[in-house]
Image (cartoon, rainbow, N blue to C red; front, top):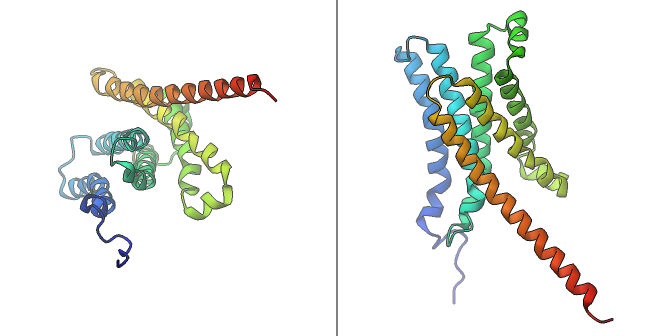
Length: 217
């Protein structure tokens, strides 16, 4: 029987998943550029750009974290191929959020930037972006091979980064708390799922060790 070429006969959804995901993640940035070029931003365009880039950073961080539980569903293992792209896009929007704030809002004036450091939500935002930088830098296959087991430990920084990003959003909002609370709830579910699985693994390992100690010989 003739061997099937790699990729041939693959589910069409899997074939188009990467390019479609790439385009979908890029669309919010293109919409912002178009709105800015045509003057269709809000009365305070800089603030709107800050809000929109920050929201997409949080959304894509949560989508990235959702890949691991979703890929365990039947016939959904291919989702893991999208996780790196989603994570890099989350970093892209987080970095854009920071640059719009520093360059357009603060004018790169050191006194203004330092004055804002006394605000907890500003510190949480800075910390979230700082934690995402090493993840973006080490996202290549080469860095994964070079770091070995340390790569997985390093990329657990996505958890505190996501917590800080959602906290930044929650502290920033003064009136309608429903959107940030929704994101906080989703993050709690995603992290809770991981904690339950971690506890279950530890319990199985402990029981296996006990069974080994009781076995003869």
